[in-house]
Image 1 (spheres, protein in one colour):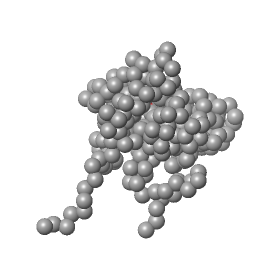
Image 2 (cartoon, rainbow, N blue to C red; image 1 turned 135 degrees about the vertical axis):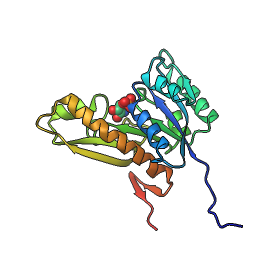
Image 3 (cartoon, rainbow, N blue to C red; image 1 turned 90 degrees about the vertical axis):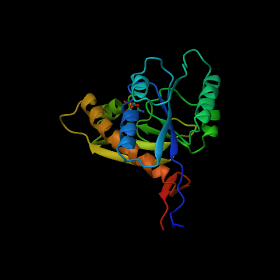
Length: 211
Ligand code: GRF
């Protein structure tokens, strides 16, 4: 008998995306290169038929699903998503540019098991075009936030943030590009922190467990 620690099955991610999918691709790359050990992508789901991220997922040979949301009531659409995620035995839902609000029923079905990335240092600049909002406001420091999803927009418990200076030479586009570089690093790190299970949530605070 060897004294091997018990092995855990890999944590199964369900990716939701609507667009280009660069965050999804960064996560897939991290898994492929061993930066996210014991994590796998169970399914990538898009609500938009021609989302480049969905094509990229198919090209990678990952399980994919298309659940078109246009013209559907939020609850009915989300019921289909919940069924699909459960069918693929998803442990953690990753919003990767998913441009649709989730219903309370969805958030309850995956309580504290949904992560989002937002391109600002929350609570500043929630909502759309956060990078332009930040640039126009004249902030000197910008960045991104990985957070759990709750019933309010861009509001849940913060897992981590990455900050960058706003340069005198920036415009809103260059700032967004530089934030995106940080997003790709931050999402892998945030997923690793949550996948470890070595944390607790106290009120609004994510705390790593100390041993
Ligand atoms: C990212 O800026 C992310 O922060 C926001 O939506 C954008 C998605 O980009 N939630 P991509 O599809 O991952 O490239």
